[in-house]
Amino acid sequence: MLLAYGFALAALLLGMKWLEYRFLLVQHSFEIYAGLIALVFTALGIWLAGKLTAPKIRTVIIEKEIQATIQDDYSELLRAEKISRTGLSKRELDVLEQMAQGLSNQKIAEKLHVSLNTIKTHTARILEKLEASRRTQAVDFARKRGILS
Amino acid sequence: MLLAYGFALAALLLGMKWLEYRFLLVQHSFEIYAGLIALVFTALGIWLAGKLTAPKIRTVIIEKEIQATIQDDYSELLRAEKISRTGLSKRELDVLEQMAQGLSNQKIAEKLHVSLNTIKTHTARILEKLEASRRTQAVDFARKRGILS
DNA sequence: TGTCAGGTCATCCTTTCGGGTGATTTTTAG
DNA sequence: CTAAAAATCACCCGAAAGGATGACCTGACA
Picture 1 (cartoon, protein in one colour):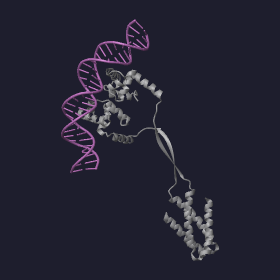
Picture 2 (spheres, each protein chain N blue to C red; picture 1 turned 90 degrees about the vertical axis):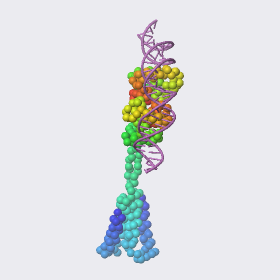
Picture 3 (cartoon, each protein chain N blue to C red; picture 1 turned 45 degrees about the horizontal axis):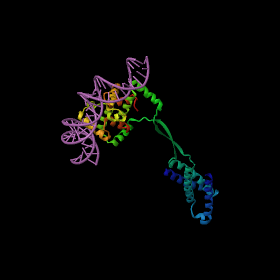
């Protein structure tokens, strides 16, 4: 960089010497040359500044969201704890899960290979144990108590 | 800025005129003056560059993981987006929310101060728009699509 | 061995839902 | 201002859900 600047200076002097004998320096006034030099070296200075100055570093912090993931077995324990507090049996939980998926009693009966009446009995117990009066409410309560995902 | 530069140039010329008659220009060679001018204006160029050019900025991106806490108005936008995709109206969303709480159509009607028939119409549209056949299913779909909390 | 909880199934009856259709009034958007 | 969308209400009918009750079977546990 400094070399380039030195070269530019040297080139200026040589160039002037050359001009002096080729086109007769006296033809132009000293001020003209001075002005030209000033312009050229101002430009050179601007260019130099661009090369020499260190870039400012701006730190941008991007906040990236991550999901809070609870470990499987731990959540299983929690789940079992929640279930035991509501007093739901395994089968009732099965039915509750299907219920939460929006399946009708008929569909649940088909899926679990039992009769519709059985599912109705289970749902009745579920409503009773969760102190709900409608299946949507039972699902809502179950969610709020962490029984369902 | 350009004015300052113009003034500097003018000052140079005047200064030279002044030098010319005060210290006799012939005492020094033209090259000396040219070199001085070059130096001064290089410095001026560098200074100008600092003032005129946009600062160089290197952006360093640091990704920081945070917990996903969605702010109210932001989540409102998201919510509106989700809603618009399903095509639910405001009122239908109101009904859907009450539905998700496990309320019966009758209770929802009382809570929203409209007739049961109105709620039935809304629920019918909700089921239609969410492509569900039962309210539990509609609630489940709405949850999976992020429409409900 | 007997009781007890859980799972299964059933019947009867009432309430709630969901589907279909139609209509009037606001509200919104072009 | 006007057309479209939203909100309101109504009636009918069949399907699903909910409440109550009773019964049978099985595995676990004292």
